Length: 332
Image (cartoon, rainbow, N blue to C red; front, side, top):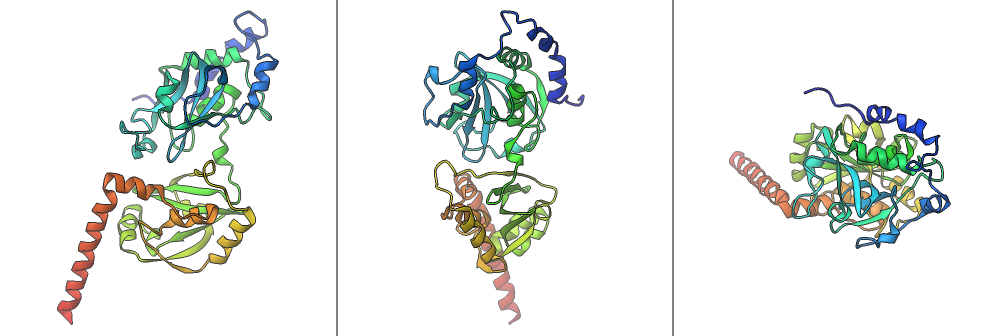
């Protein structure tokens, strides 16, 4: 299959419109004052917004359980968005772990309600104060022209957020790449997600069983057997290795964040300590959530229990422990 072309290539082909916008033709008008003021419009809703709350060209941020999906509103309750073939959710609404694996995606035009489903969403034209939006007509024209196109896709870049940012602003922008002290870092190992908290100067604090230094598959199996772990302070690059990662402060909208000074102080004080480790009640995600929000929780445990993964791993772990005990008694 021929290599996929990046979004910038498609944008270059659409550039002739830029010259036309200078002619001030009726079909290509720049945003008026009302539209510019709307750039700061910010809503948080649980149900679809009223029709007059959304304007063509708005960026829609949709809060899935473990990530944010982005779309561009084009009017008439429809959006254009970049979506992987497998989708980011399964038919029953649970997150689709395979969504991070595809290397290609398609530009789709769908009803807003079909894309949002039962998730919360908001208008978030977050860069309007620092990056002037393109003329509205150009934003909408480019979006329509790209519908149906196949594009390269990675979880870090390019992804659905890069896609809509480039449509609105004409340049790839992704706030998830900007890491600040206190941010939670989600690292995608082959079989699970490892979590860390960024403490500045390129370093993170994280809870790691000894097996985390092993290859991904072995680590995920041995983590089930581990009952102790250590709080470590390492370089972000060392912890991430060659895996993909992202900033994911996913509970900020529903749980108050602790003061930054307290987050960082607690993280530093715990470095070097040995702590109990349990895959279902005290893992690396519980650890960083407790640091940022004061509440220990783990969505990946909840999701794994829902599909039976934890149960199967627990049975395997019990069998391994039982075999080890039998060998021990045999030689005593």
